[in-house]
Image (cartoon, rainbow, N blue to C red; front, side):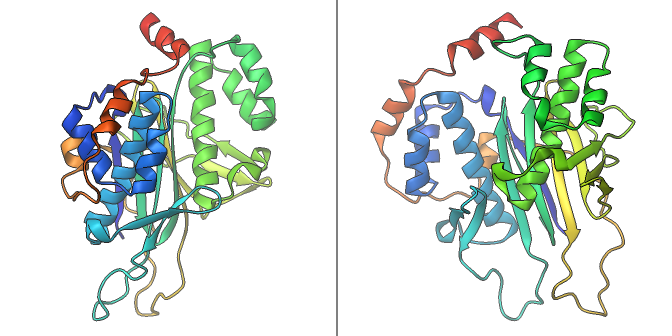
Amino acid sequence: MGSVRWAFRCGSWTPSRSDWLLAARCIQREEKDRIGQFVFAKDAKSAMAGRLLLRKFVCEKMEVPWSEIRLERSPRGKPYLAAPLKVGSDSEPEQPAWRFNVSHQGDYAVLAADQGRQVGVDVMKTTMPGSSSVPEFFRIMTRQFTAYEWSVIQSASSEDQQLNAFYRHWALKESFIKAIGTGLGFNLQRVEFHLSSGPLTQGRALRQTKMHLDEEEEEDWVFEESLLDADHHVAVALGPQDKAGSEPSQPLPPSLPPPSTFTLLSFSDLIASASPLTEEDSAYWDSFKMKAESPQRQRDTHASK
């Protein structure tokens, strides 16, 4: 079974004119227009990286020519491959379907993909609340976690560690919601996470965290957790193995391969297989250069670190 984990650090990406205009030419026109409407450059770069990650994955792993890829969004906003409808040749044995998902938050855009399993991914940056104290921030967010989860979050010895635990839980919940594709209407208190006892460290992915749904442990769901750096948690939710179409002579694998960490890509990696879909639009660069990098509060927080 195939598995892909890619990350791109868009927070430190300062695209040149030629890079930004090339990136814009290599995505669908409506996506280019949507990205152009972002007020801040940080959000535009994150969204652009997310689209390039998706197209790179479909091109290189699903072997669809870049110019033939047509990505759409579900009513809940989850990206999916709308065209071509069939991937691969009729003479090849049918392979388990690829599922993929992207997330961008903080300084990173990430993509996770697996064959034969639902997949959701979420990346979260640990940040101090902008306009309230940590206790007040937690009070506002009370309904997002169960009493058990809050006991774990608030048992940490410092506010920094409590925030780390908060965002770790949040990334896990979001990864599950994104995997099942239900969006904001899902009651997050139905889902409770029991974290692995080992600490998260950079360069290693853990898979010991367990999920309880409606107070019952879900043994068919697997969660991978890792740190992209000291401030960014990433969680990958993997659903039950697909059973449709499996041959009796080809039993399902008894277990997943060991979890892999995210591979950090460069901009050159992102566009290695790309081909332009539209003509160059020099005004797109002029518009991008007029944008502030991020809201003033985010710039002040970053400068104070």
